[in-house]
Length: 304
Image 1 (tube, rainbow, N blue to C red):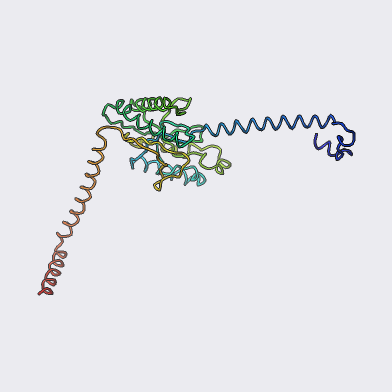
Image 2: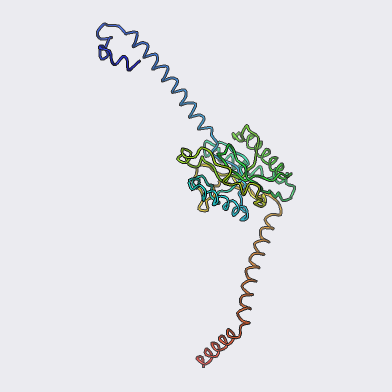
């Protein structure tokens, strides 16, 4: 209609000035512009509200088992070799985690409230664990709409326990007035590839071909013991190791810290033992012993 009007001979004439009236066309276009402006404002408000309500924090179960991270990196490398564009879709190994709960925190005050809720949930989680380990097994690969690819949990009672922990924490956060949790059912998973990491990539790749990781579809990646839960930010700058900005953490599992210390000491002992064996091997060599004796003799002779 605007284009047609522009072609008319009186298109540039102000009918209000010329005749002292408002034309039917002007009334029509004013009303139309008003409706369009109002509708656009409402849509902008809805978009803004939706953006404000989007999750920006989450409860993370960090993945620390090197066997799991190495296995995932092997899959990622294989996929990139076949389609180099997907390198932009890869989650870096320092960021590997399982999300237990998402939430929206709109101010530092709400962040503080969420930290308090996390600390309060420690006793509830400990009560659910009853002093036992919660070993989570990862096996196989699945996807969401071929846009997000993740390592699956092996079916076990432990997965059910993790779901119970998530629901318990969700209740505690909501009692504190924190908008936490989602309407859909909790499905724990370990994401390692997603198209949403790169808007440019999404223009090129609409779906991730499952054949790219077919060889690992039933692969056993290993176990992760639940020992720590973090309140992390989705938007703040990540840590140097690639992990998310962490507002606060809780450790769970009564005996796990002592186990970690034992494992660390065991690794150190093995390293020292390996060095001692190498020294013994060197000393068992006659030429090495002769060289050492000669150097000792020369040192004594110099001192005299």
